[in-house]
Amino acid sequence: MRYTTKKRLITGSAIISAGFLFATASMAQEITIAFDAGELGSTSYNPVTASNLNSAASLIYDRLIEQDADQSYHPHLATSWEESADGMTWTFALHEGVTFHDGSPFNAQSVADWIPDFAGSDNEYLVAAIASVDVIDDLTVRFNMERPEPNLLYNFASTFMGIPGPAAYEEMGEDFGVTGAVGTGPFMLESFEIGLQTVLVRNDDYAWASDLSENQGAAHVQQITFREIPDQSTAFLELQTGGVDLLLGVPTDFLQILAAEPNIQVIHMPGTGISYMPINVTAPPFDDILVREATGLAIDQPAIVAAVYNGVGAPAHNFLISSLPEAEVNDDLNVYPDLERAGALLDEAGWMMGADGVRMNAEGESLSVDLFTANSTEFTRLTQVVQAQLAGIGMEATITVFDSSTIRDEYRRNAHQLAVRAYDWNNSDILDWFFSGTRLGYPNVSMWEDAEGQRLNDRAMTESATFDERVANFLAYHEYVLSQHLFVPIYQPTKNIAFNTDTVIIPDPVRGTRFRSQTVLDIRVVE
Image 1 (cartoon, rainbow, N blue to C red):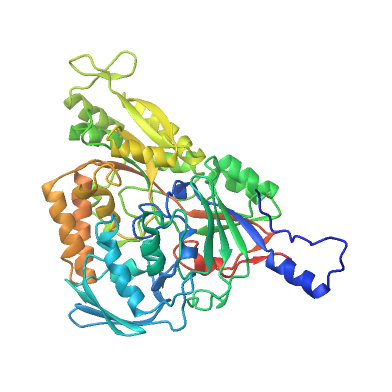
Image 2 (spheres, rainbow, N blue to C red; image 1 turned 90 degrees about the horizontal axis):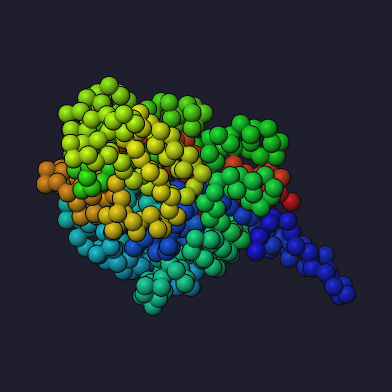
């Protein structure tokens, strides 16, 4: 079923009062949103255990704290907080009158019950520094720390730290987030078809928005259908023809076309991630660091930005977005194209150029590799360019396209060599997520286990007493990761969001680091 933003009229032989008709039409305000390609493939809306969440999750669950585009922190379910001088306790005052979707109250006990749920999950690191939680009174909670955690506010603002209803979480068990989900957010989960669509309906009781929203009450929109459309050309066409009101990810090559559409408006938000090519260090020939380094030197990031992205965005030369201080590594470690050096490294590694333009080793094996990618227009196009650039150093890459869920299974099976993928995260702890030896397969697609790397990882994650110390520790870890040639950085995008001005009104400016609940609360349907 396709939902539109047009009002549905009740007809029949009975005489319908104008007041009733107006109320019914107002209740029927619906919009359809297409997820960005990087958000496809979520299999659960359980924020505690999920390794991949999309924008809809931020509408189901609220967080203690919200983060704005300027990286500042704003109260939400927490109205204020205080850190002790030694960093060993944090005390939070909570918003009064908040209820979960099932009618149960949100209070300090809800928070105390929530933190232990992370134990044993992939997201446990978000709360690993919390030793215990004290309920001071119904609206005051204190976190007692194992160690100082200068990243705690960022963690609490994460989509993965949306707070689920304790009773529903316990009752539903493994089905929580799949067959149902309960939070305090401005929308409630009505249905979830994995890989297809998510339908949310308005929480009419909502009255506790953060100050990032102008609207402090229930959302103006009654229902939102989020659709998963892997082919971005199809998503683009749906936006043009009215099947989609809002497109959360617009490929840059469509921007010029959209500029000619009088009823389409584009919002440009700062990017919060990069596109890159992880290298499986356990899969020959990439168990040889010389081959890995040569692979990185083959990729011409500026040319890709120009050809694939029409100059929108920026080349990526390391693993972190450039706005983070931990991205300011020694420039000798940044990755730039250098075909001459790449050729010399492959010669040194014993891979000599063949007459057909494909290198071979002394055993007669061709330098032929598998290159995986996800089935979205942007990924496949980028992967084809990467394939051509690898051919420039004598590496023959065969592309295989997977859907978003299947490709993660391939990573976990260690069935890959190279892949083109992207992440969306504006914090340096993404290094822990993708390179810690405790997460092999996925998300550690590089399959990298290294004692020194893990030591630097753990020091950055657990031994940073202050923000400045954390920056220094992550900088050292980042530089070591770069020295091991575990991936190839490619592109740092902008976030392009397009909407149909005939059907929806989007607030300007968009608040927050991503398009989340604080913005959706202010969306209006065109009458």
